[in-house]
Image (cartoon, one colour):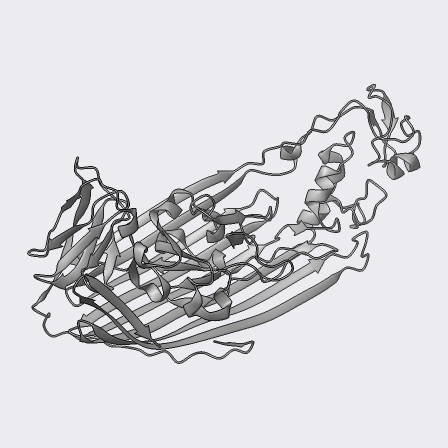
Amino acid sequence: MKKTNYVKFLPMLSFLLLSISAWAQEIAVKGKVMESDGSLLYGVNVTVKGTNRGTVSNDKGEYSITVAKGTTLTFSYVGFKPKDVVVSSNTLDVRLEAGDNLMNEVVVTAFGMAREKKALAYSVTQVDGSKFQESRTANLGNALTGKIAGVVVSPPATGAAGSSRVIIRGGSSLGGNDQPLYVVNGVPIESGNFGQAGMWGGNDAGDGLSMINPDDIENISVLKGNTAAALYGARAANGVIMITTKTGTARKGIGVSYNNNFTVDQVIDQTDFQYVYGPGVAGRKFTSQNEAFDQATSIWGTKYDGSNTVQFDGQQRPYAYTGETLNDFYRRGNTLNNSLAFSGGNETGTYRLAFSDLRNSDIMPNANFTRQTANLNVNSKLKKLTVMLSAQYTMQKALNRPRLSDSPGNANFSVMAKPPTTSFDVIRGATDKFGALPDGTELRYQANPFSTNPYWATYQFYRSDVSNRLVANTSLRYDFTDWLYVMGRVGTDFSIRDEARTEPYGTAYKPLGDYTELFQSVRQDNYELFIGGQKGVGKFMFDYMVG
């Protein structure tokens, strides 16, 4: 693996695949997998017996695979007896009988190889991609919540564009990185945080997982523990999460798929503050404008009595709780995701080209996130040679990610600490510049300059980051025999990021303001070459690989 911070494109192999005639022995086989009563089964492993080749049935129980006539396909699924079926035609519907075959489950392991679960010395869990389309999130890491035993997801309260913390089998480091390695179509990707809040505050700058569209996922395999991830080296010390994207299927014409998803977010206010005693100190309310300013957040006054009392700006208002909640500041968030995919192929090759567009308005006012993704998968088999190409290009932009940690610029902190006798309308101000005085500087309603007016923090602070990212790989596999092959793969993960942020002129804790802009480029290249195979000898099956 090589990382650089300079812009340099990786020359990728380009293949022009011309087929004058189809290979007569191979046909595109498709069908449905069902229970004995006709109920459809999704996530069923369909493998070519004695090889690593295979596919998985989708949420409609449908599968598709290109094999030669006379080939034996093995259908296996947890809780059902495995079934071997000889291919004799293009359509092959299969019914599975219930049975206890947990140990015969076939899963995808390192380098995308299918293995029987009982043959593994470590734990592997595989989840079908349809599960991630049911509960969509802008960040794939958050979508793993509750789906895999031993995997704990801690999504921070940093909005739709925020990062996620995924831990497999508990934390392994007190101060360092203990998150797993992510592998997309065989390419390890950079998934760490691009930046996070420190002791004095700041922003969560997101992570690499937000680039993935759930509609493009075929399945996800989780390799747990050091043994499972050994083939990926030290980077995989905390486990591996392998993401496989969808490919096309052999069919007549072009298949078109369109998905539309709309979600709404609402703050659930679980605060339980007391509203019997109001602002002040020593059991009495303030009696002057200066006291109101200095004691605004000290809730040690007398009981609310509704009498007019001077406040921070010299105006008389009732000494009473305004009745406002968090939802009087936060807005209702929403996310709209549209995906369009084209797929097809024939006996010698398949393709899938997909586009997606995500637009999010966060619950934090004046914050949003957009993402556009293009995904291409091409597979071709010319007799003994198999060529695979996958590429994903993502462009995303986040505007005004919420500030975190310490109070400077942190609207969340200010909203929680707002004086209960002062309404949001008052601290928003009377000008078109929210949170500002008539002279354009921050409207302060309490004495602490580091507790920023929430409207000033959300509408006058500025933060923007724009990312362009390409994850691509090309692989060649040549089968010398049915028990020996050689495979080479080259992959790249290349991203460019432009981040700009402003603390405006007139901010209480930084009167002159400041401006910062950061350009970052990261490139990671991976090259793989290995020889392997699978061969049965009597009742024994041997798997071998060297690379």
